[in-house]
Image (spheres, rainbow, N blue to C red):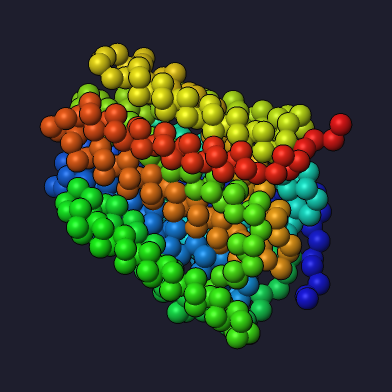
Length: 465
């Protein structure tokens, strides 16, 4: 193995700034469009469903390409992939800002920004794991990155709402491009790859295609539910078959001693598997709630972008409060306990949204539930990431980082697709019923996450007595 280049404490603190900013802007991009639904659909001559499809494709492209993105870092270098990803993302943001129609918006935002994110996010988590070698400093680093990611997702509606109301929805994409340019400058000065790339390492193209096609079919199947149950069933079945083919081929390649896109040994770790489930559900709940509440407020209640964004300050405030307390919580409670408590609080928030909003027109009824969701998610985002990343050694960080980010972004795309499809199906005819069904689906997903968290080892991350 190549010799690691060690970094000093000052260098580590500086490197953390572009890492956290990168996670912030990518998470922001996944949620800020939720408050622009009416503005974008009117300006581009499309519908709420058209905007939902654009948001879902962006999240899906990230999920589908995150595993290949993680593997490419070993061959081309983590910092190089990080920089290339940022450049592609910036080009996509600028193209989205001048989009004349939905097709160009999908190309810029959904495709280019999605590809850029898939290239730049795995290096963030790989480099963090490699640079921060002890568990305490690594936990703090992941805490900062995860907190900025959660804040980006939660504050996306607020920031996007203000920009849209003050200027235009297009200005939000210009802001993304400016921040990306800043990250490029900071990373060139402050980020150093501790390990050299290995250009001779092969890349499993066939595996990358199979995994991407399988995930695409699954999420497309969910989106098709509103049009045809037969089409939905066919796409879901096809997706399941392709993913089964993918896993069988990965196992066969490993047995033959060939390079596989994803090592099946990653799934031999029970703790990591459960941690991945909790990650997936956390982002499903965040994005599912964000899209459902945003669309309901704009289409049914007639709120504009800034009014919708202001309501989501409750989520941002809750997430900030629990994120700032994350380090103290980690010293006092086991990671399993924090994740379990986080799911309980988040599910309580979804139920509160469901019970308080139905049958009343008061805007204040949204705030308690959204605040609880922010509190719960902010508490458990960091321990879930730390559990997964720390379950493997240095040599597996490229693969587990790609898998971890893919699973999280798949959760985001499933949240937007599942809750969004349920909501859009009856948003104009039976809005209260569609809103309730979408929130029930989000709560049901939360129960699955809670069960996975409860099955984590009790001693995991237990603080010293």
